[in-house]
Length: 383
Image 1 (cartoon, rainbow, N blue to C red):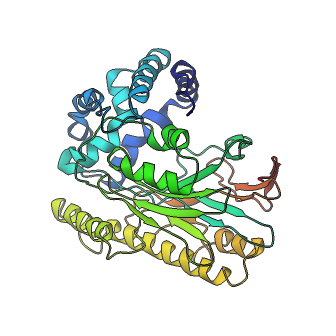
Image 2 (cartoon, rainbow, N blue to C red; image 1 turned 30 degrees about the vertical axis):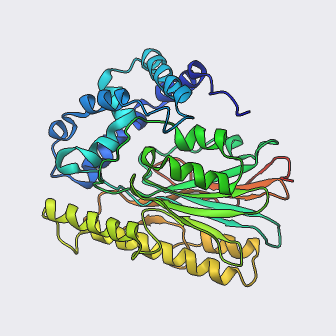
């Protein structure tokens, strides 16, 4: 028997509290990031039609026959949003920004503009090392709204947890609208309610492919199986099994195989965007995408070398040394007219067999100091 849906009222209360603590980060930052990367756009024209799109998608209830798990989650989403709007004092426009801005811009916005923003994050999973199983991530983002986080209890494995996931951003300026629009919480809740291991997770995420996108995911389970899923588009789904070394990875805003159907689609959509907005091939947009590719190649090559002798120290050097020797961003600017500047704001590695998590995170803006040593947290080792 699968667990029931979460309590929508409790979840709405938690989200409302977070919004009240930093309202601009939730409601202003998404629009700011679009306009910062595309200053030729006008805010009013950009957002015209957003509220109508959000209302339409909330009315597009998925078929319970085709998606039998979806019905209780539709009720959960509707009740949660209703309560959130009341508790946080959100207007219809605020709620549309919070829930539907990126989908609207990708599918129907002004020139179908969805700015990709700064490339975000890399994740790796090593099933074997001198410290057992390792799960490491660099979290990259512009630092405008960055605040250091408290103890990362959400990263500790639960005693009953059998499937683990982590993800990176991987979006497109414009994407073809999928046949399903209702915002089912596929990644945040449904995946772990209906999948218990890597094979069942891949089947579930593929079957619900139209409901999620703009993310590359890394999944692993207690048996040491792992998979990388790349999904920049809502209509494509591509998974990658690890090689003999068992190592899996994902990197933000890129397709590792540019000749796959999704890779070709990604390239075509980028070029279409440049033509639509009369942007040059040597401008900041293409420089951004080229940098994404370089980070993916650096990660893949570094892990291939590490597979010959998988050690924690080797993994830390790959992720923590500043670019270009390693993957850490320290204010990376890839083009003179780049709108937002990339930083690695946090890195963490989970030593699953030892029950330790090491975390490095920058201080708050404007200093953004990278720490000399990590914080160390403990949880019950994963058996």
